[in-house]
Amino acid sequence: MLLVVDANIIVGTLLREAGRTLVAERRLDLFICERAVEEALHELRKRGNAMVRQGRILPVQRDTMLELALSTLRRNIRIAPELVYLPVERQARQRIPRDPDDWPTVALALVLESGIWTEDNDFLGCGLPTWTTQTLHTHLTGGWVPT
Image (tube, rainbow, N blue to C red):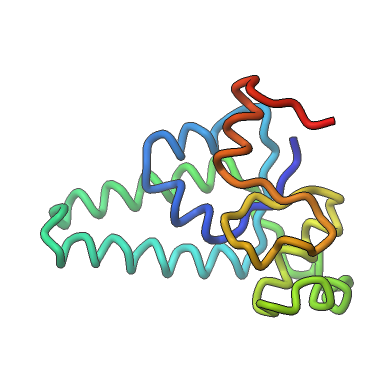
């Protein structure tokens, strides 16, 4: 299954073992745009630092958690350079008016003719299939098959 991954999936999924397992699923062919990777890395570091400040984890645990997230991303998600999806920027921006900063994810999905894995409702109605983590997991475990 070919999907473009939104930044919020990286942040919300790769910090958990179950999420890393899902991202490593062999039936998934995952891509992400450069800009989404930058956003996700920033948010991962921010979230890890907040967990340390709150006393929920130690700095060494944060570092391990971040390294696991990054290594899972590098092994299982292909990063598409902006050059690949820039030609459809205008069309992508028209499809996601509520959050124009997300146009690269829509553009990459248009180029790849794929769906988008996201938890962000701003992608609803963009004319491309959207998958939440829950629906994707249900599909992969045999609980539901799209027609």
